[in-house]
Length: 20
Image (cartoon, rainbow, N blue to C red):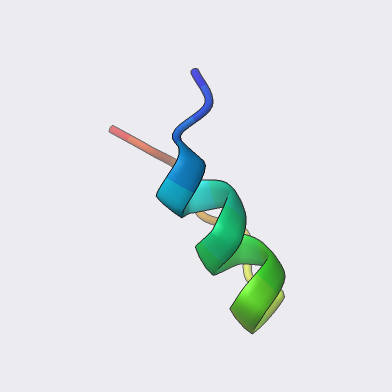
């Protein structure tokens, strides 16, 4: 849905992270 660490990680590494 929208995890905080996912957003931070995505912005930090500029990668597309898809949460399970």
